[in-house]
Amino acid sequence: MQWKPAARRPIVGAAILLFAAFLAPGAMAADGGFSDTSIGFRYGPDFSEPAVVNADGSSAQIGKRIVNLTHVDGSASGGNLLVVDALFSNDDDPDNDGNDGAREVYLIYRHSFASNALFGRHFAFGPVRDTDIVAGFDLNTKDTDYAPRKRMFVLGPQFQIAVPKGFFAISLLAEREYDHNGIVGRAENFDTTWAVESAWMAPFSTGAVPTQFEGYLNFYGPKGRNDFGDPTRTETLFHPRLMFDLGSLAGHKDRFYAGVGYEFWYNKFGADHELTQGAIEHTWLVEAACHF
Image (cartoon, rainbow, N blue to C red; front, side, top):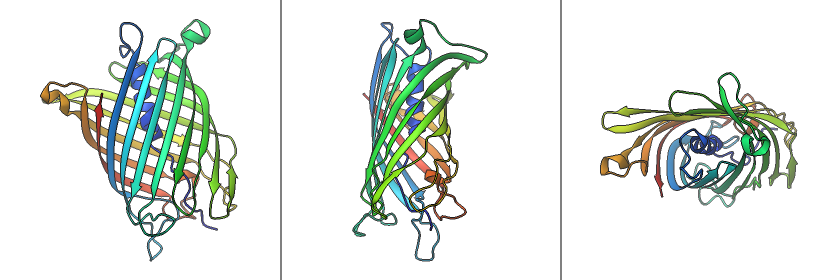
């Protein structure tokens, strides 16, 4: 049986991207602490969802508006990250009544434990300047026939790579996911698997406007069979973007960013693209964020 649409894994890398940015050298205030809250917006016209297809059986190209709230804080002992995405699809990704586009809420929480606080020393070697331990979870709900209720837990080390400017971070994680399949009317209990999440930010200037080339490249291992009996596959999620500090033009540096991004997702949610239409996604996005 073809794989049906499941819980959307949100822009997890974006969360790790912001988290890593604040944990980078020089990000902490003189007292060792920091705090930042932002509201953001993204729009892309060509999202895909596994098994969401047009009348001719081809993959539906779905427009999505995404409103985001992000809070991050930290100190020398570690940090906290909270991300809440509200996702609004157009009619090509219908809700369970078929009268409107689907709506989804996705929450991410991560806590980092600084190695120096845990073990009294920094773990640095080769190009790695420090190592943290990251633990957290994802939760979601979406009003489709699938009725996902994703519960995903992660744990593992995050390596901060020494770079001249900006940052580069790689996390090696153990992941366990639970979900709900409304099509067959029962819970899904996936196998524990591995994940690699990497994120980077490289600052430079475009004339008078400070600019950041940032993004993430993530891999998620196979997690067993879904409730339709199909084997899951390794996912690849790639999302680079250019963000411009437009607030600096009005004397408010680091307050308002806008830019363009691109998202490529291979075997989305672990669905085998050879069996399921919509399991390969590629879309351009406009993105913006206001920091408080």
